[in-house]
Structures are given as structure tokens and as C-alpha cells.
Amino acid sequence: MACLEVLDIPSAASTDDLGLLVAQFAPVQRVLLLSHGPGTPGSALVWVAGGDAAAVADALDSHPLAGGLISVRLCGDPMRWVVSSVGTDQVGHIAPEATLADLTRVFSKFGPIYAPELRRAPESGKKDQWGFVNYSRVEDAEAAYAALRFRVVPELSGEYKLKLQYRPLS
Image 1 (tube, rainbow, N blue to C red):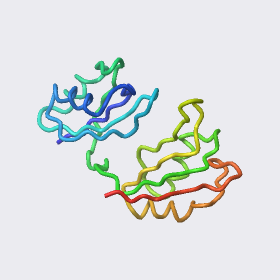
Image 2 (image 1 turned 90 degrees about the horizontal axis):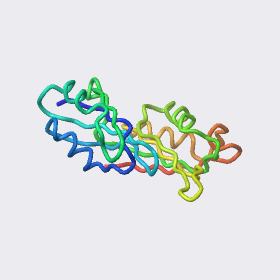
Image 3 (image 1 turned 120 degrees about the vertical axis):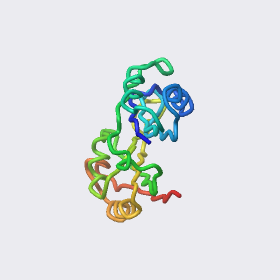
């Protein structure tokens, strides 16, 4: 089994659309959408079985999908990617000027994260009050929650205390 990293997925594309496209080149074992939202290109990991994974990646690179062109490359060691998350920290009171890089920098101090996101208010396009950070290890998510809950973190929350919720996933 090989892992493909798919980037620049148009927001109009679904997990099923991606899976059907990849299945034209190799049997699909799993599709994991990492980030995807209205007006924002998404990314995904796709595990394929059999065949030459490098040839599949080459065939799919710059392939059209839902009105856009996707980028595809091999993941390298597929075991470095987590197939299912075990914990998510939901982050509130994020300042409008905070960036995804700020969120990533603050939360990755507690362990590797994947698919962080900042939500934008649909009517204004501005960041609203929430973000999400996913961890593959329960201990990392719990450590971030314990350390940052109700703390002032200027690069994320300005002068306000962060509001966190921790949700272990099964």
C-alpha cells in the first residue's frame, strides 16, 4: 500500500470525487480529507494498493478535478501519517489578525498536529472566533488543553483568554 498526498483540491470537490478519480489509476484503500472549505483549496491523503505508486502520482499530478487542477506527490513513509485522529482541540477567542501559522506554531509545541484550521465567518470572510487542531496522540491533545485553556496567548488571542474544548475521537 502506498500513500499519495493530494493538494489544491477545489472546494467543489468531495471525498467521493477524489476517490473516484484516483480509482481510475489504482485501487483506493482510503481517502482522508485533511483540510477543505468553501473557497479554499483542500488537501487529502489517499492510500492506494498495487501498481506503481510513483506512476499513479505522476498520472494524477495536474489532473483536472471539479474545475481545478490538483497536485499529487508520494507521501514517503505512509506510517508517518495518522489514519484516524484520536483528539481534537477546539480553540475559541482567536484574534482576527491571528494566522494559521500562529495557530500551528502555538499548538505544535505539544506534539505533531495535522489539519489545523481557522474558521471564517461566511458573510464577512473574516476569521470568526474558532479554530481546530488535530493530534494523533491523546497525550499531546490533553497537554495542549491543560496548558492553554483560559490562558492569554497574545499571538492567538490578543488580550483575551483562549477558550478550549478537548474532544477525544474514537
